[in-house]
Image (tube, rainbow, N blue to C red):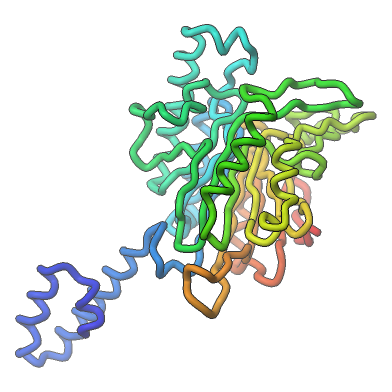
Length: 366
């Protein structure tokens, strides 16, 4: 009882002291149950006692607030929302033109700041902590690390160029924007708004800030170059239901991120990289041992994901590495399949990918 009492506030302690002389077994059971509820309610992101996290992943919303509301309705209807610990978004909240002219136009910036904030408020409607990075179609203010997000909800965190402790030993690090997309040696979509040299320098600074944490979760708008989740081979980059392949696939990934992930330290410490940007490259891949997940676009296809992370057993919580225990990738139109899924695999990374009403199949990502 006194163990539970240590987790209670002063008022509850006083109630316990008052009830103990009564020697009422029923009252004792009530107090123990109350303590259990208090302890369960205290399990928050950053708590040393957290052994597992379930994360809702969305990306490339592109002003489509209605898709967020539909996703929330589905999660509530399938009793999944309460099982989610936090929400991450890999960028492109809005649809701002990724051009220098748009960057210099104050009116354009104000318009898309308002649009991005509406999307952030919709994400806050999940009533979970929200972590995001800006994409190449988001206003420049979201890339300013010194600028406060006064109009954003309190539970929403801009992770561009930042790190955040999710649990002792597990650090979230984020970087936004895109890199030059290359097709047959030519740039087809220019990177925006940062040059690749800034991205490389930013990754280096993030890893320096991550010293002392055994596991890293990387949130990026662009994926690493040269992996399947960054390669657009479909004819229509926003619609996977359109048949056809490009003669020369587009690599929309970041060479700087690939270089960062290739280091020995990154290969050892990164649990997973979550990104978006390349709508038609939705799926999973690996760079060495590091798992890469492109959840796809919530607007273009209704794609979203749910990933489970767990802490390895044995040793101090702060030194035990975090690893993927399961992954689901779904579309809103076919998400009912998740209601029939009772457990996520724990031996390796598995993905359920549903597209264009095709029959879902489980399969290894490797």
